[in-house]
Image (tube, rainbow over all chains, first blue to last red; front, top):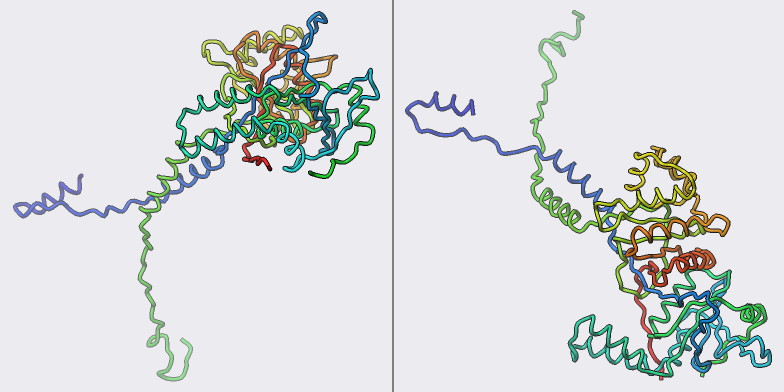
Length: 218
Length: 223
């Protein structure tokens, strides 16, 4: 300001001309600061937010008078998980009172052709219906809100009265990852009825014994 | 003056010409760079959601679930790969009550311990912890964060001194609406996780979340 006034004083009577100042501002400190801030935000940002899967456990009942719900044996598929990523399954019930009728334990694995194939075969009807519905929505043939879709899928899952009931049992050597993997398989193969339950002594015995490898794929 | 060859190379006649390099301050126009930086900065500032600080590094397993894990009003039980159990819970939605503070008071009462107001306040602002209640006081009074990490030895969950049960019970009493999430490491033992689940079920929590990472997978039915 002072300089401008001075300039005016010198050019008395002449054309009033503001002195031109160079508009170059040293931006280096600002850039430095911005660099720092960007680095800070980049490092502290969490891009992929953690996801969660719901799991509902069967209620624990200490009261012996309350009867556990009966489930039909021919719908039951038992999945046993053990250490070293080992996974076995058997159909029906292993009743310790009838040792001759204990079903065969079949060894499989977590791959696409392993347990998933077994589950899909069993849950064919529901899986087909759900995939058809999803496809329609994806192609735009059916327009509905996400919540409606979720509800309809839920209804479809309930519709099949012969859909498998999967009991997931793990022994002490199993890893947490195995549990999540198998619950995830339930979601992939759209199985509605599954539960994580305690392993029985009979089943532990079955695990201890040798299990035959999976039969050759049909 | 030392004599040299006459008329040849005398200081008087021969001086090295000073080479004056034009002093140019290299001026780069930084405006576009600054513009870009400003944009990036704004982007990061707006999209950022801070990674919550946790007592230990946990590598969660993958699943196809697309449900976003709850972030507020939640009890998170962390299971490390060394099977240590940590706990994190927040102050809830009601800002007038500091739930963490109240819960700590109640738990301390059970163990006949007392915490000063300052310690209670510190506890209400910190996040996950994994240690017996008896050592909590020392942890809260340690200023150095490196020193503090040494206290994280896991919450006792065995039947002789089931402190996780105690914590969960009092959190549930204070904040019955809180969702429960188990965040376990892939390598954690099922045994430990099962134990945690049992403790939750003892406290009437039958529905909870398992924190996972999203990984898409699809199944195809072969005909």
